[in-house]
Length: 393
Image (cartoon, rainbow, N blue to C red; front, side, top):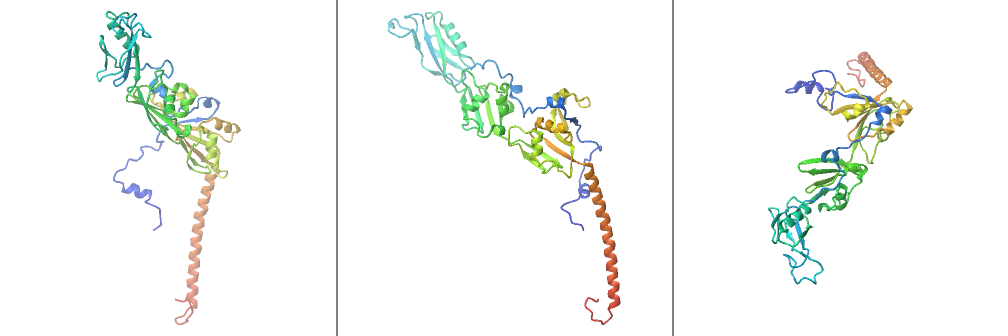
């Protein structure tokens, strides 16, 4: 029996309880082949794992109004035009102003606060201007030209949770002026690892979006406002690509830097092997967005119209001197695969080597058989029944 490292393909196929073979000899998935040129390079970019802008709307404009929630502590200050009204006594002439600050109170479980002579005022999910108008409306016929100032002393309902790779994880209260994602991360002590290894996920009301941390810094539109109840999860993830074929080294390679181009990636993989590689056939496998391919002028009529992610193979020709410049402008993405094809002469050499090995093996077997037969005849001629020669049968 010839030794082997495991079951053979035939054994696996023959002993399977059930099998689902390929229906045709064609490719498993349809894909697009795109040769790099100056038009294609114009539209190549790394969109990252997602977008907070697309997930949660515009990132610019005024900060969202902070609404009062259950458990918040409210202070109400009442003003009257002159003494002798509901809140300012007649003998209050020595007071520094015609106002009185009511004791702080917490918004109750039903969302109300209480103001003397005005009764219960609804505060839940309302801004302070709306609460002030409600108080004045209820007191305008009883107090002397009343005015009310409502301020939020402490907030528990407008907090954002920041967890993960930050130095001070926990809950923070949103500033009245509004906080963006980077503001919240900064108030949580900042990130622990280099920015090119960090990703940020924002969860809000059952929805979530993820963005590359560097994109938050580079693209202000991604730095959206946070809202009460949001959760920010900052986590480390090292992007990587894989390289196979006629490269100096095959396997998975970490980016370990903010940007990696195709030329960088080929260098990390040990370059092209002089005795094997076909420089004109260097491929990058990835999933590309349909809109991007259409901008490049790729005909996608053979793909379903509702398919947004298209398996794509980009090809660069390193035999062309300009191919190296193209490779420097081609950004690698996480999970990209580089494959370098073998040169045609390598395949011919493989075939000739195999042919030589087979014919050499046949020749060796024939020679060994002839030698063995001659040795047996020699011993039979030399050896008698009682010769005593060493080696005789």
